[in-house]
Image (tube, rainbow, N blue to C red; front, side, top):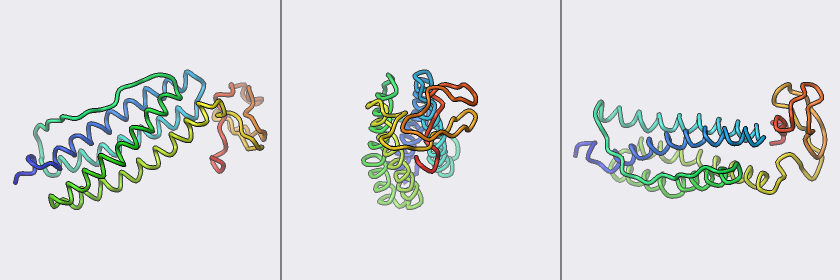
Length: 193
């Protein structure tokens, strides 16, 4: 059977399209988070968008390596939605779960059955990353949705993303005393995230 006629080829095309779309959704969500005063959430969306680009490249490279040049058809369903930061985090977490729990599990199984163990491995390894994306989005959602993003129950080290100023307290400062940037630029220090 010619590779282009396998289910795996179609699944790679769907995965490439899905990762490409997720990348763009996350950049849109980053803009909204930034406008709403969640600089750290925006940075997470942008970082994850970069991860999705890398995933798309893995799937694209598998297609190119097996097909060379040509056209592939994609018939799949993809999520659409864009609201406030909390809603966008929920959409993102749900999308990540769908990828790792359903799509990439099934795509990996099909690739294995069709004799493409290298492609199956790619689906399985990327699924592990999507699990972590989902966890991070759900944690951020809980903080944003419950208005707890800039406060904690015990003292923490908060860092200004703009100038690096460190403040210890239960809540991020409303204004950085060093550079005068607003609270939206504060995040927990990396070691406490």
